Each structure stands twice: as structure tokens, then as C-alpha cells.
Image 1: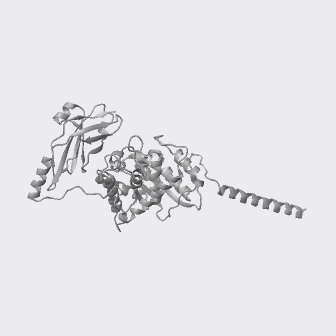
Image 2 (image 1 turned 45 degrees about the horizontal axis):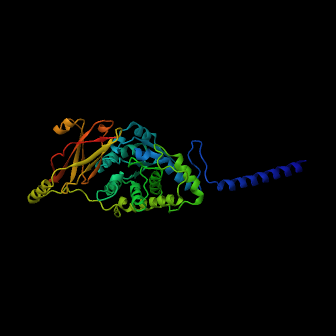
Image 3 (image 1 turned 60 degrees about the vertical axis):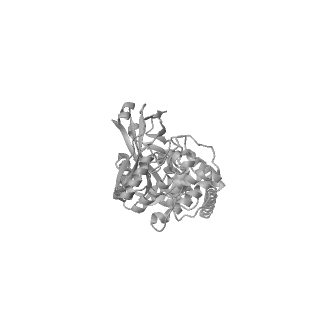
Length: 424
């Protein structure tokens, strides 16, 4: 009887092992697995464990849940990470450094990586540096071993191309700041620019700033290869198609523009390859071992050198002959905090411009009770001007003036004629 029982027990064990082997083979061929939260989680290949990653940014981070798209790409490449975000729409890193939700997330601790993203409209290099200098010590206090990465988005649609492209300014500023604090850089804006100009792929939403789902995939690809710079580029295969479609669409948020039931695998691989290309291209510049020139051209610092007495007079005379600024049009959405200001022409000799908003035409004519005054160290025709003080205003007026810097001081032109802002 004991012999019969032993024989039966052995047979059952053999069957169990066989069934387990068959099940494992079937699971290894599965395309994806969905967590109860609805996020794609299953990966292919070996799994490596990494702790939490925190994203700190604004709407360029929370549109289409960027942090979860990065998490999903990593999962498909065999890496288990958990990404979360603390965001405040329309805010720069200076604001984020004092925001309650950001501080609470930082104090949670346990992050191996913290990813920082600054504002797009009204971007300012000095504020990027100031915000980084304020945030990073707080991050290190609670996460002493955290690696810092900057995520560089792209300029607004009206300022990404042409002579006045802001992309070189963005990229140069992010490189300088990342280098100064020993951080990494994910230059999504550079990849976005090549897709937009060389491949005619427009991933802008209709607001001309935020990303469609594939725009978010651009950012996620650059961030992935910045997180894992030692990973070789590996294209997605046909077996990844369903997984990627679900990953992108399950994380769509704040817009439905550009949503498709399935996305071209060729386009996804093009995006992923450019994420790899630019993440690696900026490394020498960030590390201080080389340089990098933006895909949109070289950045030139505004003229700030002190002049001799003769130069002073010549430069001032040239500036005054240029005439005063004329505003061609000014538009904004009622609920938006930014307006788009277009000049009839640039003042050739100018080093920058001041833009001032008023609540009434009378205030504007008298140059009194201005709502906001914004200064730009850039000579271009179109400005995206951001200020919380112009949000939800039904009626606005604007004036602009140019300036030059001589002997460390600004010399201003006269203010432009008053232009009413068209509020949509």
C-alpha cells in the first residue's frame, strides 16, 4: 500500500511540475499585463529593481501622465520603477520650491531620482537656476542619494522655429544649470524640434504649447535614456505594439487631441531613437567634457559688454534711429495666464523688450496702474508673455518698449502706442 501511495504521489508531482513549466512558457509570450490600477506593468526580459522616481513640474509634466509613461517604457525594457509627480500648472521651479504639495512629496523620502521641469511660457534662465538652487538642497535633505535630472520641454509653437527660435536659449540654459549642480539632462525639446522640422510631425495641442500623447512619448523617451544612459538603443518590435498603444492611451489626461486607437510603430521607434540620440548628445556638455549646439542653431548671449565713450554714443544713436516699437497684435484666452504679443518689426539694435499690461485704455495712455511688467532679454518679434495677474481678465491693454544695455545700464525707447488685447 505504501509503495502504491508513493508511486501516485510521485506521478502527481511530475504533472504539477509539467503544468507549471507549460504555464511559464505561455506567460513568457504574453504581450502585457495590466495592474488593477489600469496601468501597464508587465515587462519583458530580466527585471532590475529601482526605487521611486519623483517628477516635479507643471502642465508639461502632468499632461498625459508623463511619469507613468516613463514607468511603462522602463517596465517593457525590464526595469521595475515607480514614478510619481508633484505638479503645479503654469508655475516655474522658483514657485515649486515653496509649494506645499512639492515639499510634502520631497519629505516622503526614498527617491533615487528626482526630475525637475521648468516653465515654458515666459521661461527665464536665471529663474531656472534660482529655482534649482532652492529646490535641490531640500531634495538632498530628505533624499541624500537622489540623482537629479532636468527635463527640458520645448518652446511654444510660435517660438520654436525661425531666426527667433527660443530652443537654443532653452537648451543652453538647461545645460548650464544641470552642469552647475551636477545633474543630468533629458533634452526632450531637441527631439521634439527635429520631429517637428525634419519629419513634419506636429505633436502640439491646439493651444500651441502642450503635447498630444505622442508629444508626451517624446519626453518619456528622452527621460528613459537619461535615466539609463548605458542602455543601447533597442527598437520596439511588433510584439510591443499592443502594449505601447495601451500604455499611451491609458495615461491620456487633460486632452483628447491626437488620441489614436493604434500608433504607428515606425513613428514610435523614430521618437524612441531620437530620445536616445539627444539624451546622449548633451552628456559631454553637461559633464563639462565637450560642447553641444542646439538642433535649432547656436545660442548667442545678449549684448551686455560695457562700451567705451565712443561706442556708447554710436550705439545709442543707432538705437534711437531705429524708432519705437509697434505692436501688430495681442491675443489671449480669457482663462489663460499668458498672452501672445506680435510686433510689426524687431528693433534691430535692441537687446531686449519690456511689455506692460493695463486694465483700462486710460491707464495705459497715462502709463499708470500697470497690472504686470515683464522684461525679456531677447530680440524677437513674437513673445509669449505669462503673468498670473492677467488671468481671467475680460479687458486688457498692452504697451511695449525696447531697450539696449550700455555701460551696465539700460536705455529705453519710448513706449509703443496702446494696443487692446483680443481676449478669446
